[in-house]
Image (cartoon, rainbow, N blue to C red; front, side, top):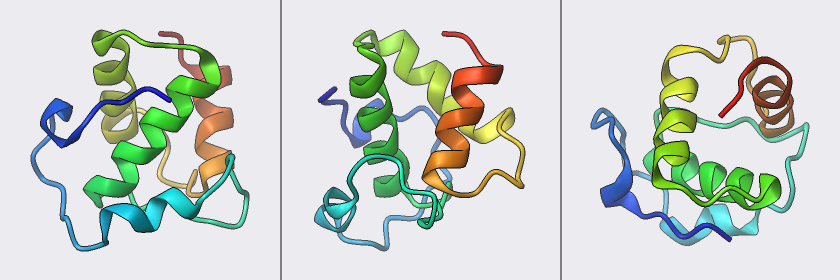
Length: 93
């Protein structure tokens, strides 16, 4: 898995209320689990998982995915699967 950390995130408006390990229980990109884009650990784990799934490793790609989550992914895309699918079909890195 890509192994980017909290210090790699560009945006600073995240909350850090969930435990870091809570997100590691999510496997794949479930359609029934919403991604809280304001929760730092959720975003960090999602990006690392997405990068592993797509075989990406560059820090610049990590930053582009984070930026897409903040500025491009429509707000009606809420679940891990919906967001992953939107990134795959609507955005190139």
